[in-house]
Image (cartoon, rainbow, N blue to C red; front, side, top):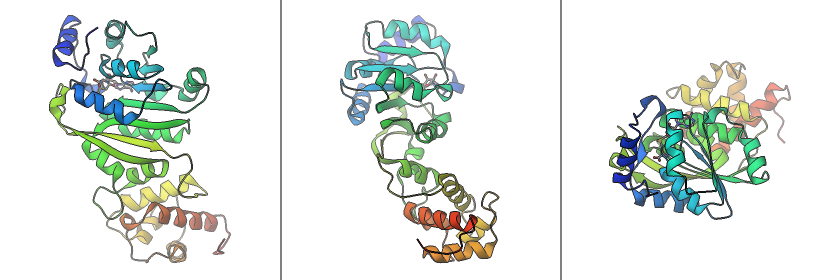
Length: 296
Ligand code: SAM
């Protein structure tokens, strides 16, 4: 089978199967061999690795992954793509295609069955409409993952990588940086895809942290605090948090927790680092448990 990264080969297979792109599945297929090579290189996949690919499409990147990895499982929701994948991946013995919604796949079980429970690599040109649920699902499920190398909307990649005080900084930045070290490795223009997306794209590598960089007593509470701080960007932290239903402490208590954490009472959430959010959430957590304002 010819490489599908070459545009004529992609067009030929799409015509052969009279394939109609499904907008609802975020189908934009890569047609640029240099971008594909860049993704594979950034992912660091070797013949030792088991790779999970999300949304193989017609198998363009899967072909590269089969060459580079020991074994690949590719999860594709669109059943019309399955017969195409059978043809385009026919020469590879190290790939399994699953016709499923990635959000319903038991990834922990997959890792146990295919990789003896050892860390896997995830590589994908993601369907943009579910980027956040896919990435957060992978992180929050705590399955063993070495790194996630994905094509996402450029704006989303910027948000994942940005730090305090920038316009792109928000709940997604903090969540991604809590679980991983993000690095944008390439910007990819719309003409590298068929059909062309309306937005710019970027490849980002998220290297999963083996040890967390901050100690958090109650992760759910910390992310609740983070979300509440950014939901009300114009308000000071104290105001934002005292209106958040999940926190449910009087404004005075919240002010006292903020003071105890050492940040200014007039600060806005967007100025706080992950370390500061972690510290504040640990103080609020103890206060909610009724442990007063002792320092530990
Ligand atoms: N990997 C191919 C490439 O690079 O050319 C296709 C990438 S395309 C941006 C996204 C792919 O994800 C499509 O094939 C789409 O059908 C598939 N997809 C969309 N939603 C999905 C889901 N919930 N689970 C699995 N695959 C999904």
